[in-house]
Amino acid sequence: MSLEERFIDLTKVSPDELLFKKVQGGSLSIQVDGEASITLMGKHSELETFYNVGVINLTTLGKQSSITGAGIYLCAVTGMDQVKLEATGTGKVHIKVLGD
Image (cartoon, rainbow, N blue to C red; front, side, top):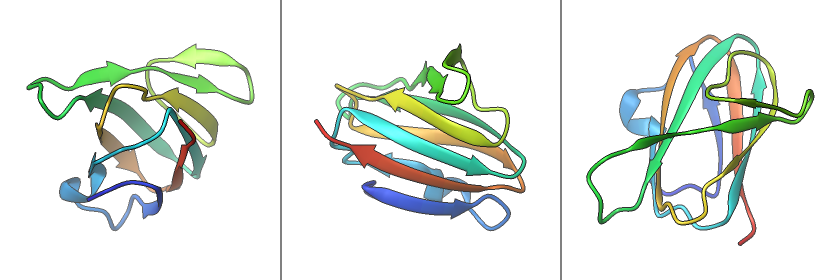
């Protein structure tokens, strides 16, 4: 599944829907409403291993290794064309790819 902009309800999503291929752009804007715990991982399609990707909480400007609640976050994905989320909770998530 490609990723340009997605709305995800964590109560109704399957793990397959949390793997995004063909990611194009330099960063992701992520807004979380409600309770959620999300870890972002990324990789290049030619490589085997996904690696954790840190996020910046745009409310506090703090660096985090995962998203732990409601808020607006930013994540750099330059050089990655696959992004995978590991997510639990009952919240809703809006993800949008931002420019190159």
